[in-house]
Length: 346
Image (tube, rainbow, N blue to C red; front, side, top):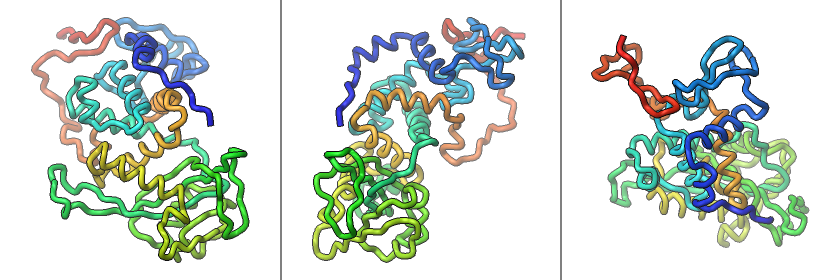
């Protein structure tokens, strides 16, 4: 498969030198056919200089921010910070932790962590297709960190991860199902899906397969009894026995090996609370390993269409300030086209 050329940091900086260039790119991703008011559908608007990246609809006179209703909703970070974070996360082969990204963006760790969590939510395309053709499916155990400051290896717990990866013929570039028990030679891996499961029961594994793999697909498994009773799929079990697992299931075991090395090398162990987000990040990067520059544009396109998510929804905590009127010690500052400006006192 030909690899698309990835832009260098100098080229990226030249393409997005200021906030205006970032706003123009985001405008084209959010409204590819031109401005459309989300309230009345009117197609004409005037740009406001008193507020940053804000338009006033000429039909209903409502003011619409360029980032309102997106993953960047009510963010005080500049657009360039969002763009650089998306570029580094999408194009770096091993990804970047919040601590590493903090040093690159020169913002607080709390702001960097929240930014990365929001971008990970934009890495899942809601319109993505199901895996099809020939798919290897298997489960593995994976360690995770119970506490942030634990260094004792005996305190590291394990979780179950189920994965599926397409098996693609190198010559034709497509999946070619063969007779049951026949070896698949000269192949490569295609798209991948990962998820955490509570146990190895048929209920958990069947639910994962139906949610991620199209009916009629040939499933190559290790012959575990949890796959029995799965209807609508062509099952091709491979009994592993005393041999190594990667001999019978080459590509899914390679995916698991990369996942474990990535989690330990980049994050020094994943947290259970946000495990699905990290798995989605790995899937996003693995499926776009041949066109990383396109993945940067893709993640920003999804971010422009993704509904807003705040800190309280991400952490699962209750907002103690909700419903309370804040007592401001200083005038509120708003983002304008000329920077942050304080509101005038009444």
